Length: 139
Image 1 (cartoon, one colour):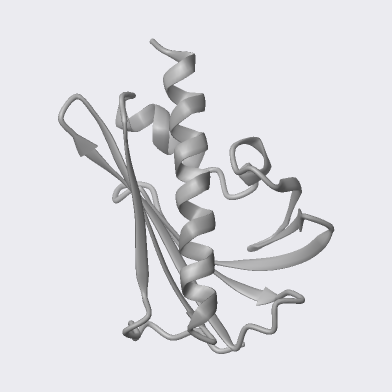
Image 2 (image 1 turned 90 degrees about the vertical axis):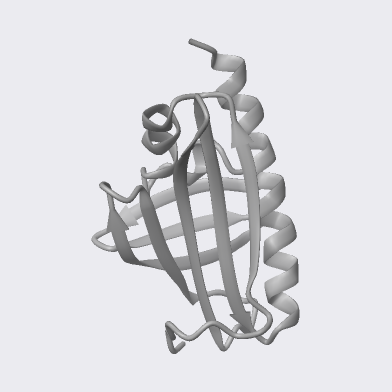
């Protein structure tokens, strides 16, 4: 599946503000092998080099880490194998300072285009769950 840096018209963004320090949010988000600890529906996650293999709703999905930048608090990856029949996929999650808390954005671009909207909705639900988890942990 080709990876492209070109954004298509179908690219979408999900976002959430979290009342937690950037470092605490990045600690969770930046762990490439920790997706099963905060994303609903991910039953298992294992890492082998720069790939992670997810068990999601009975499916196996393999993703490859494209870029991780701790200074920018950015993680970018692509789905390289799945039963979804994607022809391309690129997703980026970023954590930014937002007042005294954090803002997490998740960008996705996939083909066929209808997967972009489906994934954006899924990612928004995941961000909302992450917000609830982190804010419940408090100080």
